[in-house]
Image 1 (cartoon, helix red, strand yellow):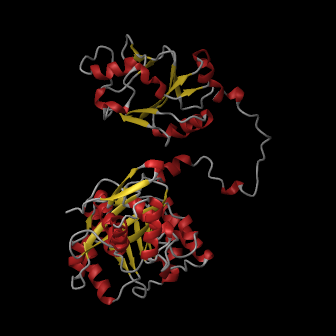
Image 2 (spheres, rainbow, N blue to C red):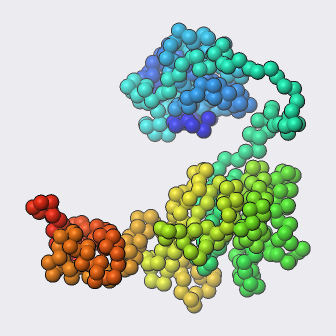
Image 3 (cartoon, one colour):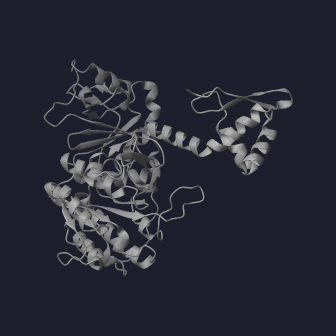
Length: 497
């Protein structure tokens, strides 16, 4: 039921549901009335003829409701929870076929159709007025469904059953409840960049600050109760003795485990096997493994090794844990200048989320370095982008640098980028300004003259002219007006103070 668009949570079971005559909750009554529900004599509401409600009494019936929704082929847009029960609402394209629908659903699913009594949550359940259709006109927001999509008589005729195949012994059929019990909801571990139940990979060039930011966010996660310190394993394979000691001084008070190759018989070659065993033995739930850096445990250039290591990480995540791989980008970026991850795609293919981390060369306070996270693979609620700043002065101690890490507002990041772009373009901007001042102020002449003087391509010159054309002196350097024959005439803007 992941496709539900509007979900409301009812009161806890100790709260009484809304019944007819409950004048303390007129807002809820008005909302249900807008959908056509009317108070029933014995309490609750009567279901209108053009709506149908599927109801399960507890989580054990979830597979049954999932089966029903799969046959329907249309995701619901309204789901209501009342204690352990759930209700899913649809509009019926043909109310006359409601009886057929009732005979078509699996055991464990109850169907409420026209005239049936149903209990509905009161106004305390509504998080915001926009969580639910508030007027009859909004009924169109509830999915309409044809009964024929569910009716058993219309399902395809099954082929004869083959009792056993080479795959039968490995089938997990009938274990959905067990896997539901194993599953963990994706919750933030390291801010909104790494979540429980996920394999995440962060790619960055050396000295970008990936470890610094990782450990800073980890400390926050432990202190705020998002993860238990004793369930965290930080695998440090990218440090000298002083660095190892410093990081242990940060992590030991939180009871976080530090593993270092060569100590306590920890062999990098064995890590993939140990991760796999954690999953098989069900020792992964609530565990968070941080691998710094992954190339020390598997060759990311070798497809077989990268695949095997990614599969081992997946075992941890599938059994309720989480893995963060820290990896490097290549020296040569992509054609558009963005960082390019190192290695084959195999480790990436086993990740639920992947980010590149790159320096933003200007911005922040004096002596600060700003880096930007950009998500390029996403299977969960991970943030698309984020930015962090920290003190990068050479004489700053690691602990002081660690304490200086702060998140940067994305609007401020955009301003940093704009300033940096202007710095990089400064020489050509000044040439264009001189060209305009000298009368080369039509678009064609300006681009060609600026390109010749600056030693860049005409296309590059045109793009720069367009980038700094506008009316805001804070980010533009010239404006234009359209004259006769559609010729653009450029005029210089006053320099921003």
